[in-house]
Length: 151
Image (cartoon, rainbow, N blue to C red; front, top):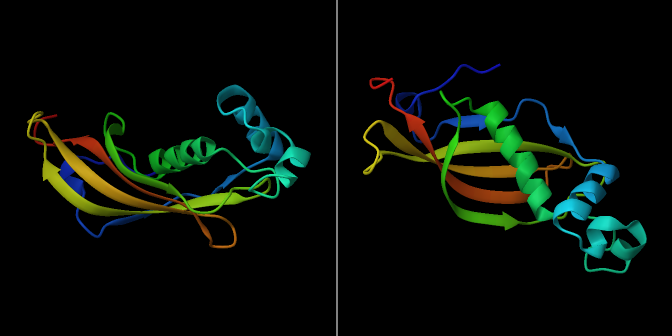
């Protein structure tokens, strides 16, 4: 388990890789689709075959949730990773049953918060890959990290 990090521990160019990966199942795709994104290509193989995706495909929001879990497991921020905005989220390839998702995260910016003097803002770029090294999601997000000197 990675150590908990403070704002002072982050620097531009720093990279984090997911610990292991997350295997996606047809059941998970359908369950998430039924509950949160009930479109035919997320619910049924046959309906998926006749769609843009040419098969059952995970909701982009399921993919984003999996990537979030991998981010939190890879970067342990003291007190938790508090979101401070999504600048970009782009789904670049469908996630299918049996895919295993892994992430590579790079710190692309660090700055002190203007409104919360006890926090800094860490800007990261995340690439999520499937088992064939195809990028399935690309995102740039910010999170808050507490200053060590204040805690």
